[in-house]
Image (cartoon, rainbow, N blue to C red; front, side, top):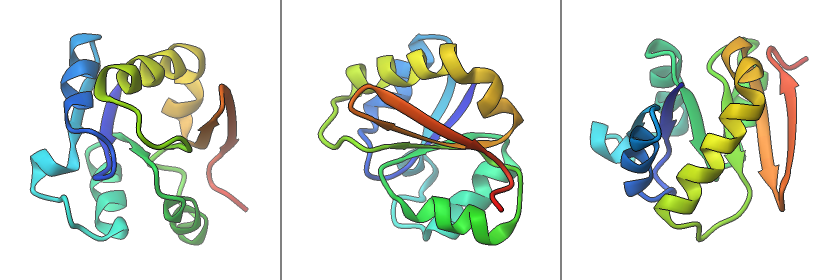
Length: 121
């Protein structure tokens, strides 16, 4: 799966995800560490990547856009280190990969995953 990790997440998580067989990049590696959310959303759509973030603003931006891509995964736990974060994302990809590929917003919190298909109405 193709991932775009937002600035609040550890940069090392992209390498850890790549080691697990994913195509992952961090916004910091793209020179987008201070880019507005709308630009990150646009890049994710253009490059067909699932955005992983701590930020709740992406849900609102996707709802307002009416678009069905890119998918977005919000991690609602701060302080995760790179390797545990990569393992968490990998596990979510294994369980919910089809939904992420089709277009959805997803939220992970305390071991639970919730998701809704895009577009949000």
